[in-house]
Length: 387
Image (cartoon, rainbow, N blue to C red; front, side):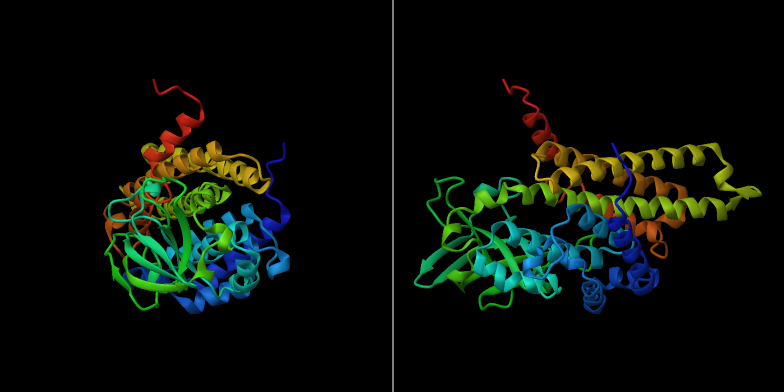
């Protein structure tokens, strides 16, 4: 079994690293975090490198679906700033992958070339005030009115809605008791009349601001039903497809990037910081902590490589992606907190990036399916009887 990173992915990793150092300096990343700012010009430059096309087939202007390469881009961007990493996911993954798997041919021809060019971003409109993991219970409705849909309801924790071109919204389109068979996915422009967006002040993931969104008699063309007419009441089929497996990996890749940056910063700090006349890296407790951090990172990287490879091959991987999401997000949180311990009081100060790593890493076990949900999925898919 070959564990070497493919040459083309190494080239992509090196390209993104150079981009990060040139276009995303630490000072800028701190400013974006402080101001909760999405640096669109930086995002556009990233798109100019062709990175959005890694999830789009060549026939629609992309370079072909490459899940391992996409995860590497997410990881490398997340080392520096989620203000660019999350919008990248909103374009390449939320838009590119979902359209590629679920959209009608006409929707693909219209939207995918724009995704490959970095011109389209989707925000996920799934969670609602009373609906979290139980997505089949969404209450937001879409009703047919001729060639239009009329949408009413609300979405919570709709990250990036204010900077998106469409909200990729899960809505109820059939009888309330027709569970799993009464759902559709609809593209809702956030600028449409009747859409109201309210910011939620969260501790981390700045740049793609988290919001509440409400829909009051919002009208969109029936063309906006994902999958076209064949997609009506088939929203659940689209959610439980391979796209959900990849979404778990996207969050895991963010966690891996943050943890890698936390370790790298710690490695440099322990050699520079001196106490009692010598570098703190000579202290056994610090050395052991770094050894554990590096070991954990290695296991995380191997799990990511394996799960991304399975997804790329089209193999059934719901168990592996859930395990990867669970392990990387929990391990990444611990690595960030260990880095803060190594930095001491400086790790609590906003002048040091470790403070941001901690805030961002705390979110990873929550989004994209919480750690508890992943544990439920893992044990259920392993086949352990409930009774």
